[in-house]
Image (cartoon, rainbow, N blue to C red; front, side, top):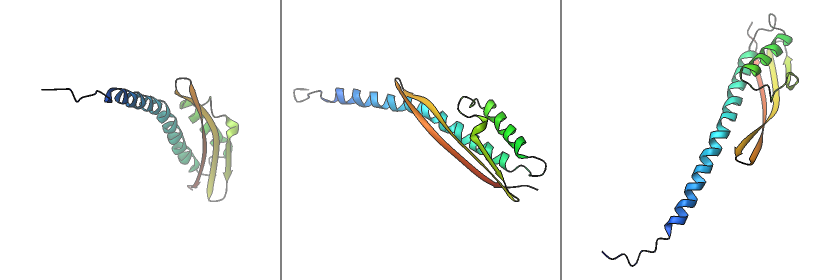
Length: 124
C-alpha cells in the first residue's frame, strides 16, 4: 500500500484538544466542589429556617448556622455577621452573602460570589 498521499497534519490539533480537555477536567475538579458546598449549605439553611418561632429564637438560629459553617469547614468564608435573620409571624427569612476564592487552574484564581436567600414557613 502506498502512503504517499498522507501528510500527518492531525497530530498537533489532536494534542491541542487533548490539552484543552485536560485543562477543562482539572478546572471542573476544582470548581464543582465549591458549588456543591454552597448547595448543601443552602439546603441546610432551608431546614434551619423551618424551626419553630416560639422555641427557637433568632440567636439560637444564628448559633445553629454558625455550627453548620464550622462542620462544613466554610468558616474561612462565612462569618457570623454574614447572616441576616428576619422572623415574622408565619415565616422566617435567612440571607447570607459570601465570597469564596478558589484556584481554577494553576496560577489562575477565581472569586465565586454566593448570595443565599431562603424563606420558609414556620412550623408551629
